[in-house]
Length: 557
Image (cartoon, rainbow, N blue to C red; front, side, top):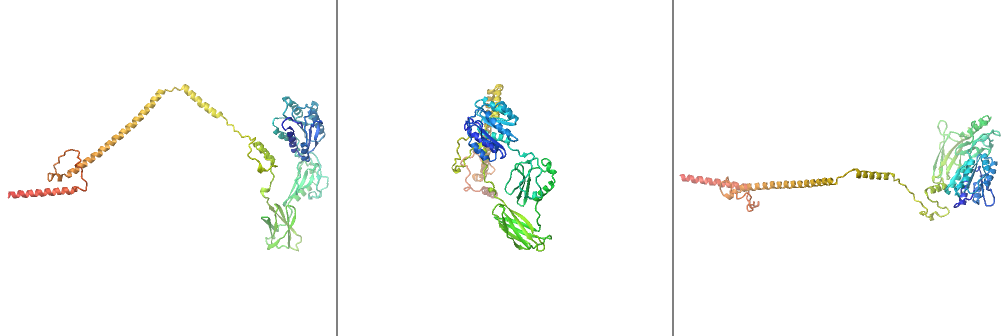
């Protein structure tokens, strides 16, 4: 670790070192070198197994990084420690601004010969030439070189580089299995030592009800067993074929070993004469037992006892009472979520001897909202970093936090491509330019054509108006002629009273074709009916004619 001349340089140095340690397993080796202004090649944390990471991180927090004069002295100390250790992968990470003197070519050759790779992380160099020493170191040893311009990317770089030496999940090397629990039924009759194995898959102890039976030479689990409800689990991290267990295949107890594994994991034999049903209501479970013989008839039991095994692996008695022929019922409290195992011991009769075993399981589900009460702080920080947000401090009261503080907030921007709109605008302008240059427009002819069209439209409207006026005048003339004819007929029938006996056939003398105002037809209420006047005139004419004939006869006499 080299103090970098950048803002918060020592803070970032401690942060990236702690991030690198956090990615390692407890069996990985880690060591930290820095310059404290006095000693050259001081070990902040000597090269050793990670073990308790908190202790290593605590040493990192107390580290005082100085401006080291040379990279050679620190790399020499790292080489001395790494060349002595038995590790599959050896890796050195150097963070510096490139100002210290470069390591000697002889040291880089020794590092490459020992297969020790070196990665240089250059941050805030004084000049472009300052990067040369770190680049040369990375190339000579087969490492990488990073030119960092953003300090926030340092933790990701160190995590990536630390994973180079992370312990592999597959260990392929000969080892002798170690017996961790000799009282297991799986190892019954087996005599140690067990044959060697050539590899295994790296796992860790689960804890709880699991039992480690066999372990590797590095105390990693090899064979483990576990009780889960009514079932049993067995885990063997090596292989059962010739890849890793070639010596086991020729072992005389190989078949017996796997037979005992299968028998232990298989379901224990129990009676089928009792059918057990369970029901859960609230925090109380009900157990119903029905005993039937081979013919399906109710079976009377001589004695029956019950026991409940709680999730805390505590046994509690279960009282069963007979509710009918061959039927028994009992209740027990189930306040805790988990699996409850119900074991029944019963006897069918004194003469039939040994007691029988039956069991069942009752599962109380865990409330989904209480399954995980911890927050995913790294995920929330990553989301805050990507979206430009901020993380509220847990030490302060969240109710007092200013959630609407816009200080340092960068608003998102959306870039709209203008190529398509500009191309369309250019196309329109180009067509207009071509039209102006190539197309000749006769404005006077266009005006004359428009004026002629307007003139025709006005004339057509005037002709339609005159036609309507003429039609209206003709209609009024026809109506006036009809009224004049009716007036002449009325005057013809009124002639009897006016002429007083003159010949009706004689046409009265017309003074004018147009009736005068005095000859207007009197109202209907003051004139006599036309039909009655005509008859009276005929009768009077007949009487006058008859009287005239009588006068002539008297004259002849």
